Amino acid sequence: MKKYLSMIVCLLALSQCNQKSQGTAVVKDSDELSLNSKSLLKAYIDNDFSLWEELLSDDCEVLYNNDTLDKKTMIEGFKQQHSLFSSFSLSEDYSHTNYFNNGDIWTNHWFTVKAIGNFTGETDYGRAHTDLKWENGKVVVFQLYSDPSLIMKEATAMSEMSK
Image (tube, rainbow, N blue to C red; front, top):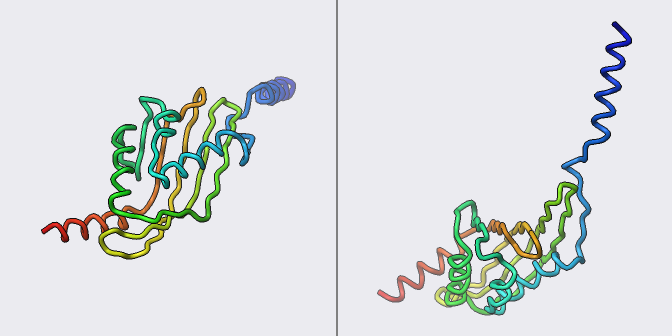
């Protein structure tokens, strides 16, 4: 009985050695995809969305604070932010890309955007985080997490001025 139990334990251990770990990754911060993530942010700051059109797949799944959007709606929303704010600048801009053993590739990007409200005149800072899933050089999932209160405050001020 001990022989059989030992044999089963050995077989289980050997079978685990042959399985590829799904949870390990190589992390890079100066690779093409990490730099592309930073280029997308710079293009947003410059109000130029041609790179967004190029790098995001047409059917890219977009989540903004867990609200589902499509690529076109997201880009139009980003363009509208430029009517609410001016003098955009960046700080604390860091990205890295995780190349997972299972083939998944995700870029994580953290940054702070500084902008002046066109209607309040206030300088505001917004910290944000994005996660981009890449397939064949295109973003197929784009997740953005940020505090929408700054945008809402400026939109409210714009609405009040138009009354």
